[in-house]
Length: 79
Image 1: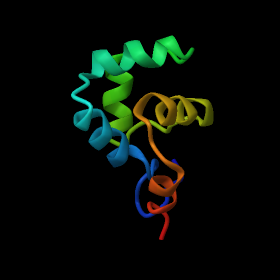
Image 2: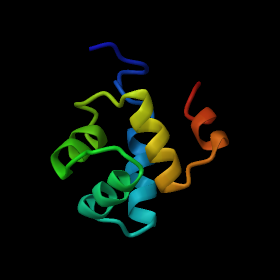
Image 3: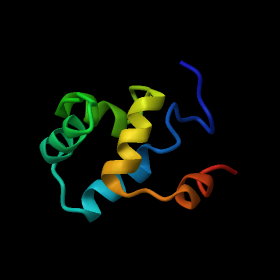
């Protein structure tokens, strides 16, 4: 698996942080992602947050929408 700064997903920590800030359980987030057409169960969300599963581009877009992540937050993750 290819990695950037030793992580397959540079956004995993941001996703976990934002999910917790919004007081969403993994099941809550899963339901909200489903409403925008992305089907991820709690196990897959855990793997994403644990950096053991790569996020696909369309999934990232859904996370950005559902968790209200701003472009600046994403660009700040890049060294």
